[in-house]
Length: 433
Image (cartoon, rainbow, N blue to C red; front, side, top):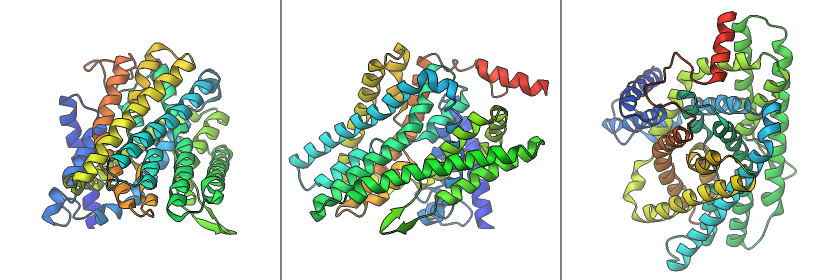
């Protein structure tokens, strides 16, 4: 009973806060995060009244399944952007930008934090500095997608952005696995090729294969149903099953086998949208169904932010260095790779700003990094950066897309009236049916 009351309160608080955000011309996702902070264990939850906010971080973590499901649908939706006709035009640019901006970001954060180590070795160790550098590569697709959906952003920058944040997950996983393997080797004095190379490659390959199978099976089963509601139900079933299977972990011959939830669901969405001729209409219906799930996801994300880190001067200092060098890396990396691939001026100028949000994937990496001798520092620095990036990142993404001319100015948009030609086309199809 208490859980249902907390969930309903979280939804209501997120929706009410979004009205205030609209007045302040802030993205709704920022409002949901702030609502979560207010309901969290360091604000209203501190009153310890069951049902009135989240009384502890453990209470929020108890609803982690909702967050996993929401991430699955977010990844499935982004996978819909990998249509073959679009990849023909932007595939080379997306791959180049996705890889280079991540590598450059990692290199710059590594340099900044290692320099900090030599200035004051007590602040951070070299293994932790290297690990944080790889975590910096990760970009949160959820906040980006929510801004795009809320303002119906449409254009070459938006299309390339969604492709890049999807590629970023695979690149970030490889960088983290390699960096964490090196960091562990520095502490233990032994390098494990299994950890650095074999396991991450296996995880990526198996995730893509599982996602491809899920997308193909969804297409095959959809053919047996003609009702829109049944097709929607089957699609939801596919995503839920993909999320469930991707959470499995086991060992084979001493090799750890796992899956990336985001890669599995992205690949499922990619395969499905390229082999199913009615996928576009179905994706629109899934977007409508998942709206409250996404609100709840971001409110819970806000409630999970640990405010105690703000009272730790060491974490704040390392966090400021991390944020400055990561922001510089994202912008310089995206700018230089876009210039290299001859992207349009608006894309080259603004895409780096849209890649700043960071959340779930980075936190998952940070939890793994706690195995290091000072891994708690890594976790707390990432928590601090997530607090900053999640509250500021969506607003910066909105400003960048608006400056690029892919979001209409405030006052000219409506939740009931699509802005983009693509959205108008889909609305026409719905009316015709």
